[in-house]
Image 1: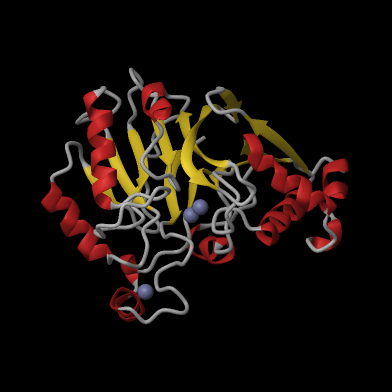
Image 2 (image 1 turned 180 degrees about the horizontal axis):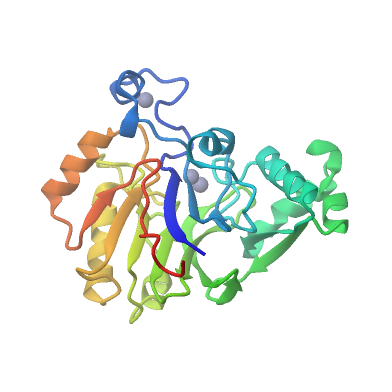
Length: 292
Ligand SMILES: [Zn+2]
Ligand SMILES: [Zn+2]
Ligand SMILES: [Zn+2]
């Protein structure tokens, strides 16, 4: 199995250009395209494993590839830019036509949204219960700090500082690949809870994906990070050995306050203590040679 760790989307809930916005960043994205354009955050670890499935999944699939081989779907939280009911049902339906089960993982209280989907007639005519009965989809409730097997990988969710639609806290995922490399996908979190930082002490991460939602803005938001917050977070993790010069940091979930070019020059100016990359849609974080 090849692990390529590709960003399928790198924006916040609005996207860039945001549909109702004519700010300079959105106008530049409309003019220039390329890395200036960001779809909503989503990550494809491998053909089998996907993190989040938002409303842009159709467009993302057109750009980056077919979703038919997805077997495991890890959900960070229940906000619509990360979990879209229509796209989810379409994926389950499609798996069903091939006689396979889709395994979907949510942390802790986030599972309550599935209870709501089971009982509402407004989402695909209330088909979810029938899909489950037919074995097309299986839900797994994960507990923070509990390490579980997902496909060939071991996955541990950490508590993020960001409340979702059903009052849950977001899940940030540590993924241990079969070749021993570790990837961390932690977005939709403000500055981390101390327990999440402490839990990574002594754990070296190779690919560290964090958010920098508020870009170069001075705003300190309780549930999202600016570039400055991300910088401070990275420094904390360097101090405790979680990150070092052999790690790579990727910044994602970026809002339309800061353009891609401005992000890149701000990161250069700030001098992050480990190699740091401003993510863009389509960027791959892992070389594909392992486990082939
Ligand atoms: Zn989000
Ligand atoms: Zn804008
Ligand atoms: Zn969110």
